[in-house]
Length: 316
Image 1 (cartoon, one colour):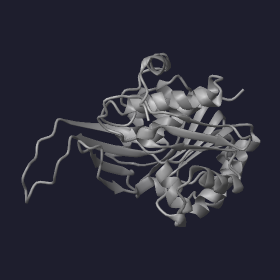
Image 2 (tube, rainbow, N blue to C red):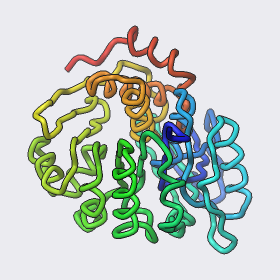
Image 3 (cartoon, rainbow, N blue to C red):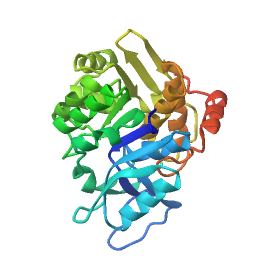
């Protein structure tokens, strides 16, 4: 029996977020905003906390600096019951950190220190311990400088060989990131990029055409998050569907795609079919958008299921 339900490896950050942001004041001036909060974010960090909130026994795997931001982030993860034994600490590398300001229109300019996400390494002798989970999630391919490529490929191959369900999310801005993605797709059951990331990687815009590219590299299924348009799913068996977004009052979309990953995992691990798992992922993402900071709005699996069954969806 696996020790964990969910192992979330990759991009972990400390974030300071503010809302609503209008403009940078001239000189040394001050603009007032309504809210500031702190959060653990990143494609793996957000997913780890959201997964724990959704009832999954979760292992966090990544890197943090041995600094004030890292201390806070690890304590925050542990406050939700996340097992942090897979997180490495670095004396000479700072915590990956961001300042994120959200405008009323939903856009969110950010300042980011890359930090420890680019430094951590999982050695082969630790593969068994890190993949001791029913589902292994690799989040932030393209940002893990020391792991991207052959190391992540070996880790994902090991996870698949152990019988883990495998999911992958990326941080991709151009076709230059495709080599790191291609390295892990042969061992990926579900590839979950945003549509913008899929377009940046392939140079294409058609959903089916992009999915074919990733299937050709080995992915078993593609789940493209479409923002306000919901999510689109297609797998190699021919199953295909679109799940619309839920109709909510949006405060901040930071982390919505990362929360989606955790919601999808929770659905699969609770025995849901693919369409219901994507619907749960969409509900989790929608709840995240109702507050400031990653995982905002997520309370529990029962509360998320109740929201999923009662909230209206957007009509195309």
